Image (cartoon, rainbow, N blue to C red; front, side, top):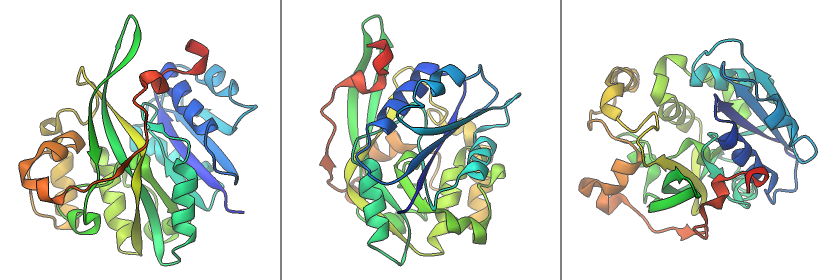
Length: 274
């Protein structure tokens, strides 16, 4: 039976992490699933992770000082024992069929190196009454392989891949900073097929207050130029996942997808806080 390693980088967001782990514990996948949490120099996560030890095969590391999100993921990767790996940011959420759908897509396609689900981008906010969900976008594209040369059509939390790819391409490129995920996709796409699962089994949280690292891509121009130069890509200007969905130049590239989430924002609240 194939083992899936879920790689989670986190820092000073215990409630977000608990909700993320709650969603992982609810997966319908019947195979082995290990969860590796790397705390990037924040307050210790021992209590949060230990609370899931009876429901998840979970391992965690508290780094003494921040090393950055990409290096933290490389630390998680070094501990992974699975032949399949998947990412999840602590504020994103997997719906229950996420791991099973991706694993089945990969196991049924021997020429594939990775698979990804479509995603719902959800504008979220937190007030006195708990989490609130606002605007939603379906993030789904007709020809992701072609679009990959101009934009990133894959949310990292929606991706699963064979860990053997690292034998050929190495780890995640820490020099790519905010664009580590797009860089990783471009590198593995040269090795085989990227399979799309046409169902929104991933929820990507967009903070309505604009605190996401990618909320202002103009501030990430140095990292973007490094990516463009490394892969000889055309410059389409600063963008992010939300902007892509509202970009009129990409309207014909968008595609329909099955929407699975019932809209309940409680998925961002760990059971212990409900």
